[in-house]
Length: 200
Ligand code: GAR
Image (cartoon, rainbow, N blue to C red):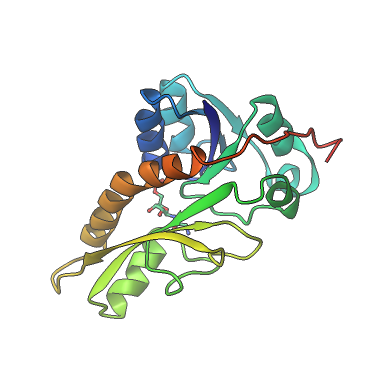
């Protein structure tokens, strides 16, 4: 049984969907939910499922080992970003090589990069009059939305689609595919030696 940690900044519907999916699987479970927003809805959703939550500030994330210590304490094997706004520091990427993934609500490499988050992405897609959008699940590296792509799925955009409708279509794809892609990856993980930040 692998331990998954979720990093999220906002509403957390994907996080909750992943929590529910793994609540009756024997492959992995969500053991920790971390957020950079103290009052993020995602923390309330996780608590409602009795999952340990952690809030961290900017300085703690980039200048201390706080997050790595929690990842070590909860024996986290795999990290899932689900609507997380900040770049993951190199210290965490180095500790979790090939074990951190993100979901992006568009077809990368289009509509990615700094500031391209949630509604901003859908707005850009609608304004470009694209005929399709979709989701991209990719490995996380030190650049925004640039890690190797693992999975994409597409959805047609109707001319009458508003930003809200497109967001709903994309969220629906996320709910179907993200947990399954996570599970495909975690079952293939070799055991990892989890070091404390002091040892790393
Ligand atoms: C999701 O659509 C996710 O793809 C997106 O944020 C949303 C979070 O929704 N992520 C990004 O835009 C990352 N650049 P949720 O909080 O309801 O899961």
